[in-house]
Image 1: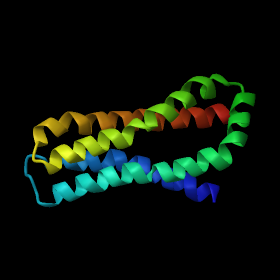
Image 2: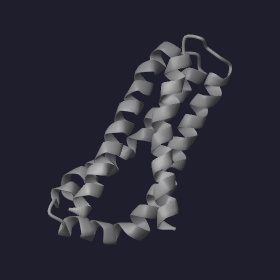
Image 3: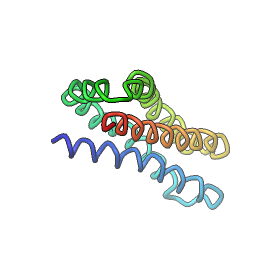
Image 4: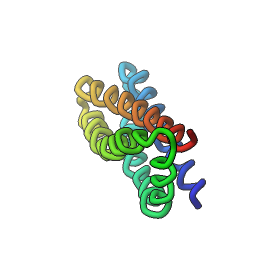
Length: 136
């Protein structure tokens, strides 16, 4: 169950990078499916909370102990705490960006999609740092 939740969490994060890149790439062409992909991106951002919650509620206590016992306990104290809180912003940003696309405000949505990409990439890097902190 842990691996399934972990992979769903990672796949959701990757989709929150890939979908906005596709949206930005096709924004000038304004295809009909752009609104649907925007809504799908917002939905993925909310659905990604589910495997995150499973990981946090069920498996996190052991993981936290392992990371804090490693040679880089700051990986949890600083990076994991930041990652957890910033991750809660992703659904809000994605929903706002999707709403702007849906309401025809493509230009205004561009900065929000870029913010979503940047934040998702940073959170992914933080996840890797935390993983390495637990292995050291």
